[in-house]
Image (tube, rainbow, N blue to C red; front, side, top):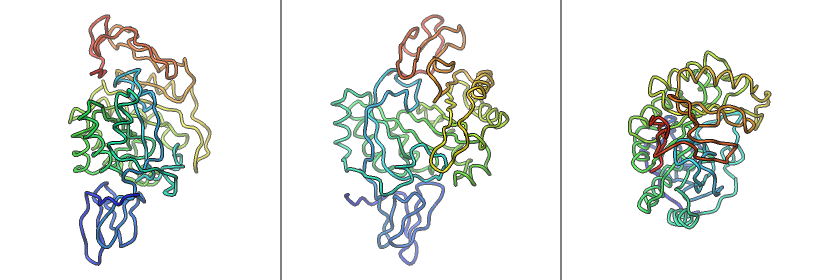
Length: 333
């Protein structure tokens, strides 16, 4: 591991520092880390302990992020690190996001970009764990990737302060933000974060013109009320009904063992949300169930057909419905 001084912090008295990366605003004593476990104070200077430390590297379908309206059918080089600034008890990637001892190998930004180019990837996805906590590495890699004509994608919880978000939006082309719930008390008690900060991130990403999709994992006993999910759909619609919303089935994992989300309930949420939003998708459910295809909201033609991660462009021309010309909010350039 190579030491890399962090950005977004200020020095305090007694060799303490305050990290300004995310809304936790951790005050960190010497030789200690903040909530994410990834940024350590060393004698009054904050260092990223994970810069270039990659725990997972793979070529994935871009639909797996999930991004259904950003270069559909393409493959993207996906990388992740370890650590997270939230504490979801049902985390699907807890073995790297919650374990700072997880095995990792060092890659320079240039090595990642070369790997993407050699793999004929559409770009690089910063995913698997929370990419915000290695913002400096994401930024450095993304800038270099963009110079080489590659796209940059973040799959994130959106729990980040305005300055680092602005810096990332200067070089990131698309984000899928995880909108975990729509109740501030739930977000604070269960996820150990601040919901209003995530909502601000969503609005900021949209206003900057970065391609945006949202995901909500419907977790049994936490956010599986139709009222709450209807509120989420209403919030998205108030920004733009064309923002794709992915509603995904939860399975027991990590520290949470409630039964998997009922598929019939997910389909009811799909029907409800489809009355407010143009594009609603269902994830983590058997292939062939409704909620995978991109359907034109105006004429009903299937623009993109999906069976699992098998994707077929059927009726789309440069991001528009080939039948009626309707803009589908799909980026293909």
